[in-house]
Length: 325
Ligand SMILES: O=C(O)CCC(=O)C(=O)O
Image (tube, rainbow, N blue to C red; front, side, top):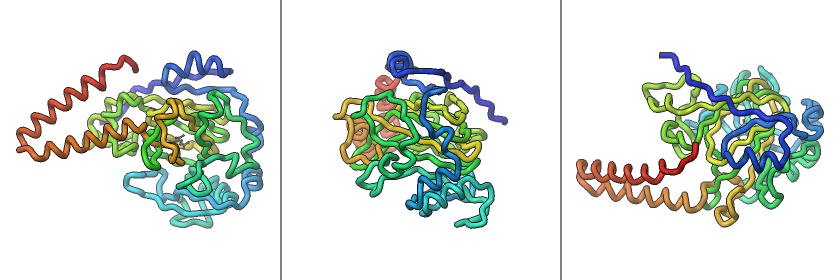
């Protein structure tokens, strides 16, 4: 059976200022594409030559895979290090003469802090010479800033469906502005309310192929509402915390995303250098649920099923009561 999901277009706005964003768009907690924002010189300056010259020979850790669909659950990629200037040139190629696995291999960079366990990714620290070219939209207060991350992909590279949750000693979630500086990128998004259709393994969906999913293995997936947009160079996508996203680089492209903390500070973990953890109370609740489910194992099968169903009803009464999309 052919899979033809209804595509819900992500709304697009031009010329949005901080006031309009904060008063009209942000409170909806839904993704929006923002066009024609002033992003500084990066949009016109960031040619391959310029990027490699200014980014220099600093080592970056990259994902390398033989196929365009990267799968974090099955780990169909390897990590390698390259000098930034070598990496960007290779990432822009369709076929490689120098390669790790094959001439068709694909690259993906998600930049990290100096010591990823301690330092937060911040392009103004790791790539100061490029960072001065980009003006990050000031849609949040300075003290809410968490990190800025380079996202550089080979043509065709598809990143697995996930939501952004960061772990250092507990989990934390953040709002996200994905700034597509060069290249075109398709983004498919799913609401946190459709999490039950996404076959989650932690923060990632097991359904790798969102365009042609295995509906025998993942029958509920067809119920997930598919939001979609195509980002052109210079577009900015607001991805609210907890929204799932899957990206395909339609051509070589450079993106930067900015995470910021939108909940009061007590919700966040100070040791979270990646910035992708669930709020503490959420992590605790999930641990308690795991313990409760383990306790059910002490019962005979029939009783276990009965009490598990009663628990589901209680969870449903909690989870589906809020009146938001
Ligand atoms: O740009 C991409 O390829 C992925 C972006 C992403 O996953 C993010 O901004 O959290």
